[in-house]
Length: 314
Ligand code: NAP
Image 1 (cartoon, helix red, strand yellow):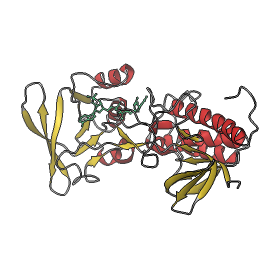
Image 2 (spheres, protein in one colour):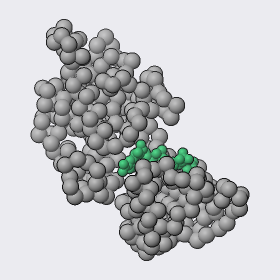
Image 3 (cartoon, protein in one colour):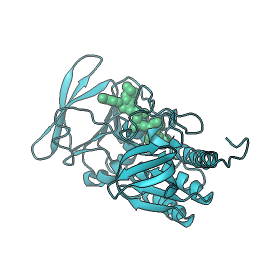
């Protein structure tokens, strides 16, 4: 049996769309399955300033739209559906989706990662009513208001810098005595007069009536707890990789899928790319590179399966 597709990409973020571009350009019949708008986490970036070739910061939505059009121009298709399982029979994969099954010689999984929650009392209760995980989505609602940012990584620093353009009453707390973020991003926060950085702090609870109005924080060095009024709490404490479709694949200690340098997994023909993959540096440019590698390796795998491999390509 010949499957319907050569390459099925699950997840339409930068990794997935690049895999689709390279796949379609190499004449693979390629489809991207995406349950939301194409772009993934990039859609939430207001100003992306570190993608090569863009001397001025580019808006994440515009970047994603351009990438989607480019992907379609190469001949890849998009299917709006949720993938629910991946199975393999012989050399052929079946991806079950909310819109019916699709079959393929290869699959590239690029399902990304979702925001981690703190689990603090009040966090779920006030989600959407002052508690947010996306500065560009919700920041403008809190112009000139008092905002608390929680986190110490690249996301927290990036997002705090963005929010500090909207208000000069921004407090940022991190549980350790220094930031985890890349120095350039951390320094930008530390030098920003609109950001009051409080290290060695944790958020104990979020309180309010119908919306957030105060939080309880704890100083981890002294154990002292105190209350402070806030209008909003933005939480950026990392992400949970979306691996539900590949329970059998090897993961690292944080739950990200381990691949070899060809993005290959222990299941031949199944590639894993982007933020769901174990990688030392989660960046859009890295995700795109991974997508390109996966498409290249997928083409080689298909040749292999069909007995047409060109010696030395793999
Ligand atoms: P991250 O690097 O995992 O950092 C998460 C931060 O949240 C850490 O500082 C961590 O503290 C803290 N944290 C985790 N759980 C916590 C909890 N329960 N309570 C309090 N604090 C908690 O995640 P990220 O910042 O979202 O970044 C994810 C990936 O995207 C990274 O690879 C990053 O490089 C990349 N990224 C890059 C850029 C950029 O280059 N502009 C922007 C955004 C993201 P500890 O330090 O104590 O563990």
